[in-house]
Length: 80
Image (cartoon, rainbow, N blue to C red; front, side, top):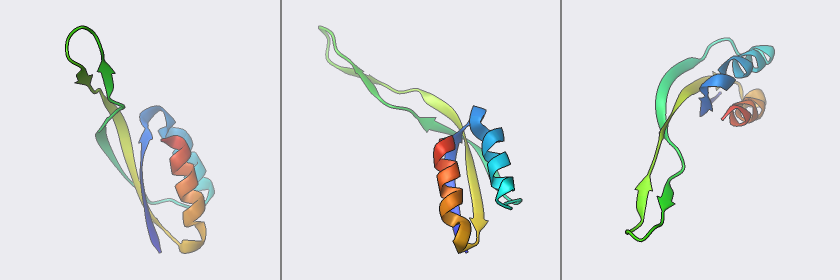
């Protein structure tokens, strides 16, 4: 058994859940998280200032048999 844990975009959650159910994954833990996005630096005559936005994401955590863990991880990565 392996635990697969990934953050997915909120608008991809339904698609990810459907694909996981197609593999036979019925139990999963979903948690709302805030993920820090890419940091951009603004350059001007003033010193560089870093800004970061907190992006809403859903953390999906599943425990699956070893033989489907790779496929589950790939589905979750595509939803990120």
